[in-house]
Image (tube, rainbow, N blue to C red):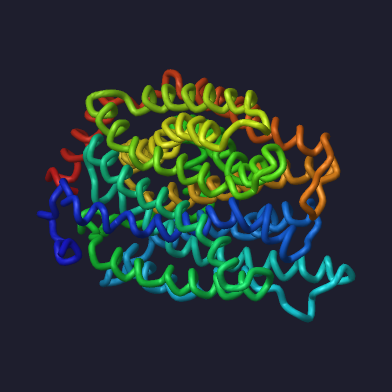
Length: 463
């Protein structure tokens, strides 16, 4: 297994089986993230736990702000760890069980907190439960993501490994879509969701044992000391111009993803008036995301990642605007076809920024002499969470203001708000993302120069 290859001769090219097994980590992470966006905030908290929409939108925002400072800190802890077992991989074992348990607690409706007089108490419970799950997710995901640029050094190999991670991420969305049907099969309501949360939480643990086994760390990377304090290193990261550019396009894309994901269940339920269409539409979308990954991977070979990102964002923005044409009397098959068009662009918008992060880390190492994979991935993970939380809070606050309430019918004002927020708002964000990607400085040729300089400094080609 690759775990035994912690030597200077560790291969640059990973075997397909090991790439696929590495992707299991993001399958679990995105199961939780997607369940939080697709089901938890807009359905469970408002329709099962009976929170007001504004309070429901605040739960992920407050929970992630609490977790926010822990993401870069976890990255720095990972960078500075000097255990014999490694500086990244041990955390994959430490965080697995608490991660599953904290996810299960999110889906409880404590009997002592039921009733309109306990709105604030229920809100506080879900903030704590959500924040706990987010923190344990960070313990796992930041070291996990920091391993990617260490295991895959080549420009294209990173895209390949990122595509397998992205496949795991997409399968996590499939798994998240199963939470609501599973809860309904288990009786629905608070008992059904509590049972479903416990089952899914238990299933989140074993994949991390597999990921721990197939990953490896390079001795040359592990030997580099973390010379700066967290504050000093964070300032250095903030001064990194390519990273700031990457953050801008990444945030705009993440906002579009999370807002669309959060509102799609409301779009099909209240604009189309067919809640049963949610699963078919989302499954069509996700099937396209999975099937298009080889296409984008093939297009990326020999081309700039930023250009692939621009093409994907423009494609998805156009498909999103076509959703404005959808009328309530449209057949579900037509809506699913439009979802397929959007899924084609979504696939690369999600993939490329993570594949581009490794080049930023290499450039930073050449300038600073320090390897900060953990810190950079910590900031990226934090931004991934906070952008989604802010986006979901804003749209839920708008819906709350428009009069959205628990029930099967909504006013025309609410229905139009759902329609425009699900379609036009994400498309606008995608156009902003495409603009930020133009002229991205870390090109294929520039990275080749950086790699050559780093290999010369290390005195060997493997790190």
